[in-house]
Image (cartoon, rainbow, N blue to C red):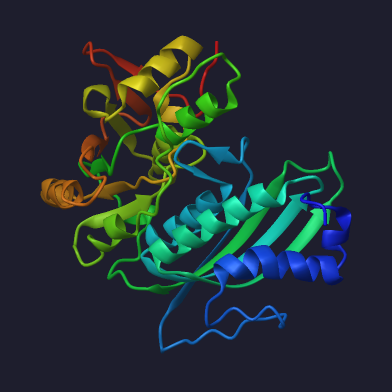
Amino acid sequence: MSNKITLSHGNGGKHMRRLIEDVFAKHLSNDLLNTESDAALLPIQNQQLMTTVDGFTVQPILFPGGNIGSLCIHGTVNDLAVSGAIPKFITLGVIIEEGLSFDTLDKVVKTMAEAANEAGVKIVCGDTKVVPRGQGSEVYFTTTGIGYKTSVVDYSTKLIKPSDKILISGSIGDHGAAIMLAREQFGLSGNLKSDSANVISFCQSVYELEGVRFMRDPTRGGIASVLHELNQATGYGIQMNEADAPVHDEVTTICDMLGYEPYYLANEGRVVAVVDASVAEQVLAIWKDIDHGENAAIIGEVTEQHQQVVLQTELGGERIMHEFMNLG
């Protein structure tokens, strides 16, 4: 049998069944996954449910610190966690390009299973399609995540007030910079790894803490996108302090060489939170005590002094942060 995915693996016949059983079911098997059924029965215990949907495409699909398999789990559970839910279930849609090797797919799905187990979620159903060579990008995933509402607060930009502080749970731009290195488009190399991880522990640690207004995971568009979301939703100004922003030296070097700014690069394992000033130091201390939270920082605040997103530079000046990265 070929060690590559072929169109026959997407036609619903024996080859698809072999693909599902030999790759997906092998790694993702649990007591709720029934590959013989078109739907999954989920146990609900008088809980409020939250759900999210997302799609995942990245090149390369394998990168330092993870791959598209772990990325799709982290992205899904993080959207639930920052919304105040404990992630429990995921449905998985798979689109595979003809020619992808079984070894690569097996590695991706194995890592997906490990990420799901670490996050405490079960993949309960899925669907697989194969597209002709040249009509895909190796593999795409779409997910639906379901979780139980747990937080005492319905996190919303409507709760945000002037003088609130803005925190991030770790270093900025690691995932985006690691992807650029992995693509080797610019002749760069390095040891930087993606920050791809679940942020459940960071979110759960503040679910019962009054004064936490809003949380978001800064994925596409990075932290700059989140700050502009806050600005546009509230009408308040956002002040970010460059000196307080945790950026690894390697990320800074890559950005300096390519004319980028780290604030626009994606993170896949960070939380941005807006909190009342009275609890900001408490949240910071909690986060710094969590694994991978040593670089957590208070990086800015909400203000009525202006109505823009402004970066206070390390030299003491100020400049407007545009919504999208200016490449010259």
